[in-house]
Image 1 (cartoon, rainbow, N blue to C red):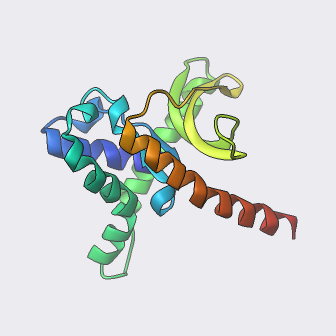
Image 2: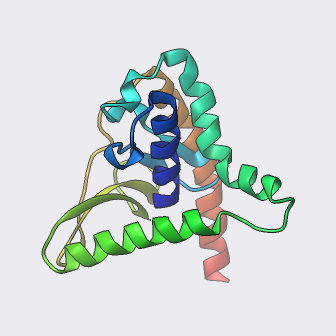
Length: 166
């Protein structure tokens, strides 16, 4: 999920001409195709992007991994992006464990939707995830997309749980 956050921040920065280090678009749902839901309206720069550009930007975040693989002719993936996202996530977890709370999006057990697992904003603290934050306000596009993401995730979660039982 952090990889999707990094990508969303980068793409918003490109459109707005701003440094992505000062952009923080939460990405909720899952980490595959339509399950990836960037909440552009919850970032101070992301919410300034014209509404008609959001659906394409949303798709761009969803398909970013595939785009990289295709650009490399099937001979690689977004290794540096994954490494950066992993380092960012690890740094937040370690900061939390050492008493400096950090907020990141993470795919974990969840009660904020009707699904048992969901990528959501969480607070990392001395005990790991110490708080799950609410989804927050979403615009019309995001609300519609949330339902699409949940429908796709439901089947994926069921398949994963069945596999884990076998």
